[in-house]
Amino acid sequence: MSLVKLTVSTLAVAAVTSGAAIARDQVQVAGSSTVLPYASIVAEAFGENFDFPTPVVESGGSSAGLKRFCEGVGENTIDIANASRAIREREVQACAEAGVSDIIEVRIGYDGIVFASQIDGPAFTEFEPEQWYKAMAAEIPGEDGTLMANPNMTWADVDESLPAVEIMAFIPGTKHGTREVFEEKVLLTGCEATGAMQAMMDAGMDEDAAEDACMAVREDGKAVDIDGDYTETLARIDSNPEGVGVFGLAFYENNQDKLKVATMGGVAPSTETISTGEYPVSRPLFFYIKKAHIGVIPGLKEFAEFFVSDEIAGPSGPLANYGLVSDPELAATQAKVSNEEIMSGGM
Image (cartoon, rainbow, N blue to C red):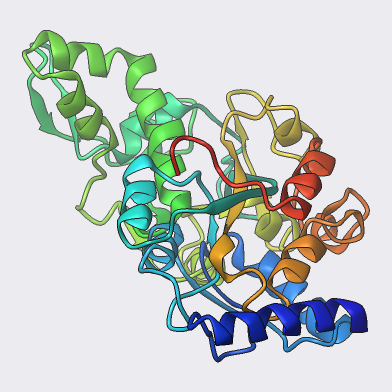
């Protein structure tokens, strides 16, 4: 490690003499609440095993983290943004406009969004995206395709095979990447499957407006945004035994004594079904590195390499024990970080 430290120090000194000095010596990370527990585990282990300060890891959501990441280059900006979705083109452009032109995209593995309820509560054991759309939509099309307020008050109103209890769903707030995947892979998919989206377009809505309507969530108290982490969702389920919550797979696996999980589309969420793509509501998890900070912020590259190492992110590592589904292409990711390979596309 002393050789690594010497190399970083030499680069830092060179940066100082060239007028590009960054004073701090602690890696700073922010972003996705889903990636937060994984990043925190890695940061703690990194601080214990390397001669670098323990990185500072903050949450705030994918969009907020990427916004901070794209503020520019320098000691007052973060080094890494965690995200439970891929960076968007407009965010890439915002980064470039602020001088963040070289970004390394790192896929750390996969997570699945699960639908869980109190272990001894109503029999929520099987769900389809169509049912969640009918339960959560702010408005649904009537017979003539025009939108009307969602009339479904109980899960049995949605589908008679579901429990006859009031709809009460605790879903991630809009600032989290989890919410975006919930909207796109559950609500939008369900909207399309029921024919509602086509009915809206047949009634005169354009495709973008129809998509927005499909993903608009009701605001009558049946759907509750959770702005905190999954512990808050669990607390709401504890207080509302007939409620259903949206969780990350890792959190559910760590709370199976309190929660039972439902299938989605006939598939039970597991590390296997998520890594193969069989489970329909799953997504890759990422972090993004500001290449301009490598060699200037001590330990930045070492932290990234440690994060995606076999002993940390591999199938037998501590992140897998916490619920992360190991990336089958982890070796390629390791090479990308080692070679400091930036994203393509004119960045």
